[in-house]
Image (cartoon, rainbow, N blue to C red; front, side, top):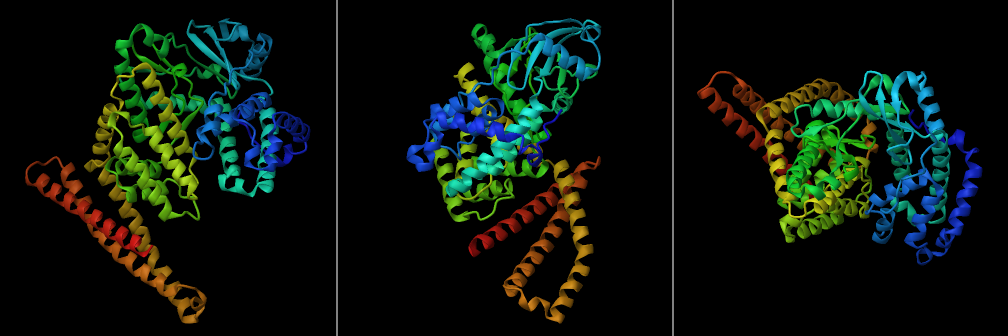
Amino acid sequence: MAVLIDIETTKIRAVPRLMQIMRVLSRHKFLGALFGRGHWPAPTAVREALEELGIVFLKFGQVLAMRRDLLPAAYTRELEQLHDQLPAMSFAAVRAKVETELGAPLKSLFSSFAETPIGAATIAQVHEATLMDGRHVAVKVQRPGLIAKIATDMAALNYLVALGERLFPRLRALALPIVVREFAISLNRETDFNREAHSVVLYRTAMADFPNLWIPDVVTECSNGAVLTLEFSAGERIDYYAKQHPQEMPQSMNTLVTLMLQTIFEEGLFHADPHPGNVFVLPDGRLSLLDFGNTGELDEPMRESLTLLLGAVVHGDARAATEAYLEMAPGSENVDRATLLADIKAVLYAIRRTNLADVSVGDAFESLLRAGSRNGVHNPAEFVLLARAFIILESMIAKLAPEHNYMGSFREEISRLTAQHFSPERLKGNTVRLARDMERFIMDAPGDTRRILRRIAEGDLGRLPGLEALGGRFSRNLERLTSAIAFAALVIGGSMLLLSPMAGWHHVLGETMVVCGVAGMVLTAILALRHDYGQR
């Protein structure tokens, strides 16, 4: 069952919990912050308070640990030590939860069900079991009463954040209400086992032909919103396996890097928690990826922007990196673009001075996030999650295969994906979509123009500021649009010739048309960017 947080209906119920929270915060000297930053509680006190407050605050602390763009390093380092291991539920509670969710007695669903869990965390615990047909499975069971507890604690957390902003106006720069809202969305995802089952199916479908990888399938007849049954992964944690087979680690790390990049750029998916406890090595040497409760999704525009951002970072192009970064955070307002550009230049300069083998993609992303937060950018949750995923993956590589050339694997895979990204087939698809958009624009333009002209004739636009500037921008954009349509037509025509089964001059002409069209669009974009930056 997903966590549906209704702050208004839980506000009264949250009052006793809020008083309890205030007592814990007071005991750990949080109230000293009322007297200024010099009286902030020690990082250790913050971690201990969050652990004492339970699931929601512990999870929120883990989220804050990722936000190195918001908090001082001493606090994020301490919050990274937060653990989510809790005492196991009693077997009676597990039995009751499974039977309630699946609507049948435990003994009619499983021929055996281990009473001792394999692991117990904040959200759920996992038990080894055998189905009636003999299949070996792992059953993930959510803790009872979790939904109501999370709803109450989220109401209290929202109140505390609002109170904090009222008492400390400087906190508004951290956009904590947005962080809390995204945290609530993350909890919704993590507690909805139906969504996790759907993510497993997506990954299995997308990675069906991926070599050296196995993802356990969902047993749908024994799964529900709070119970998830999967095929059992009879492997060994990759960090344990590495101690006995260190020579296998470079290939395993290559597999993980390729998997991460391929799912991001081709499927718009990524596993957000690829730590050693979620990566197993099977007896036949294949890797097994587990726990899809924390996954990220990137839509097509964000993937396009991410591709441009990586390309700009690789080439040290600060302006292009700034534009691509801002495209990934469209909700940002009041951004100091000039200072942001200067900060990103400094980030890219630091990367260029670093030995390429020592470059960290995750650290580069986090540097961009910090630069953005300092200059008014609202970093999208998926980008924060992606940076964290790369940091976790790179940390595992450094631990298990310290001599492995991670950046070599990364560059090779990025080159392959970039070539695929700009293939004639993809260009054809993009230009067809562009042509459809242009068609809609052209069809709507006459009506819009008549309405504007009517308002001008009636004098309605006379009260609008900056009308001349607006007209100038409209004229320039119309010229750019006309050029873009012409060049797009060249690309479409050339792509069609390249895809034609006929050989010979058709392909030569097609390549020429595509090259000219792409070059024209790039030139148009460069001229537009130069003019726009010149106006700033």
